[in-house]
Structures are given as C-alpha cells and as structure tokens.
Amino acid sequence: MPILGAGHGRIDPPLAFISLLLAVTEVARYASGGLPLKRVLIIVFKKDPDGLPQVDPVVVRRAMALVGSPV
Image 1 (cartoon, rainbow, N blue to C red):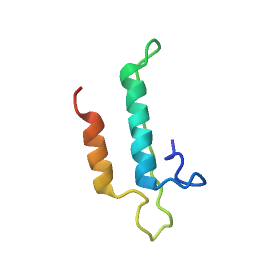
Image 2: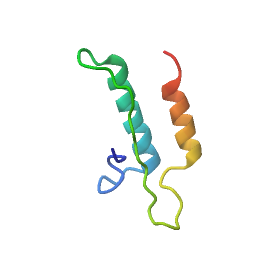
Image 3: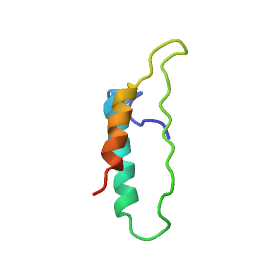
C-alpha cells in the first residue's frame, strides 16, 4: 500500500508513513475475528530516480522499532 496522504493530501511523507504504520499495527493487534495479519508490505517510493527517498531510512528504522516492540 502506498503512504496515504503524502500526495494530494499534502501530509509530510514521514508523518504519513508513521500514521499508516501505526494504523496497520492497531488493526493487527486489536482486530477481532478473521485471520491475523502475517505480513504487511508498505512501499515508499522515491520522488525521482536520482533523488532522495521520501522518508529517511532512519525514520523508517525507528518507526519499525516502535511498532515491533512488545506491548
């Protein structure tokens, strides 16, 4: 899934990424019924082939550590 809101929504890409990650985490942890999520793939595109990524890799690592920590 793309980082929703970072395009026409004009949300800063790092903030949109963290918001999306937290939302998916909440669904995975607290959703009742159905099958639990085993894997989620979030793709963060670069603005252009030679440019920097929209979300800094440090932000991605820190966000993943935040949602991956035990409750």
